[in-house]
Amino acid sequence: MAEIEFVEHTVTAHVPELANPSNRIEVPLSIRIDPLTGRTSRIVTGTKLSPTERPDLTGLTAKPSFCPFCADRIESATGTFPPEITDEGRIRRGSAVIVPNVMAYSEYSSVGLYDTERHFVDLPDLTPELVSDLLGAFVEYTRGVHRIRPMWSSINANYLPPSGSSLVHPHAQSAHDDVGTTFQRVLAERSEAWGGGRSYWEELVEMEEGGPRWLGSRGRVAFLTPFAPVGFHEVWAVVRGCRAIDELSAADCENLGTGMAQVFGAYHDLNLTSFNWALYGAGPSPSERYSLLLRIVSRSNAEPMYRSDVTYFEKLHDEAMTDLAPEDLAATLRPRFA
Image (tube, rainbow, N blue to C red; front, side, top):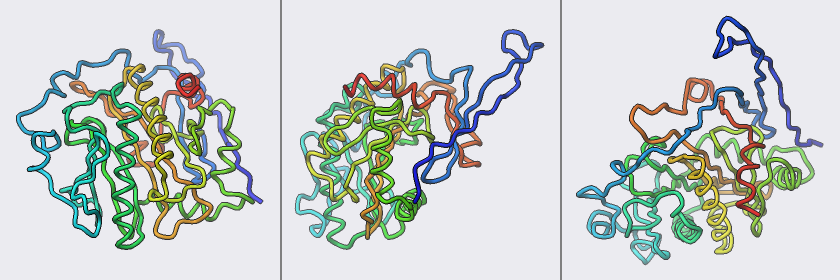
């Protein structure tokens, strides 16, 4: 019977001392293996890559003459959903609005706006209510799509250009088709193949609860930092006992939204400005051994000549490299979840 093992290799690197290059020093490097996927991550020490101050976003986030997501344009600039998905045309929950995506990323795709009244919503203003309403509206859209037929579904977000966003107005997107993404399939396959007596996700939450990577829980949503992160400042939320996006309840959306808002607020405190998040469904026939997973990662700051946080390690070796241990990040975030 399989047990979750947190395998870490500590490597000693020999490098020139920054202030005295003629002197060689020893620097520890941690290489960690994700227990489920086998993917390795490298956690470097020494010089930090995190920003020391937050850039001025005034010019970037100023409202342009035309934005299709602002309240004065959204009715004329966006389409409506067919009645087999929803009778609402556009799905509205609180300040959130879900509209069809003009980009064909998947067979069925939508765009969700946290708030159409404000062109830009900064990190501290992504409140639990805004995020919860957005999630709830996406769940409603996903249920409409799944009435056509069950399929792979995910909800995903880019925030500001360093994350890959082509529009500044904060939004998220959903994707639904019969293929899913590479990582969705890996999660589903490895979760089903896990040899433990219980699901991997149940065991993981039980092992992490109260430990150095644990943040807290709300309802059946558990928040933690992953042992082997794939991005900077990565945070996970595991929705225990929930296999698919259309199974999320209103309480689940509220609990997820509250925790996500706490992470966004912490990112602001850390002088960060950009992020991605993804919520992964497990396919048209989700296994009882799968639990819905949300991942949030920070991205490079939006400033002139910024350094990308994606290097050859991530892009060509499929290996993450970060400069902050998950345990240290958890210690920073944990007070917000108390």
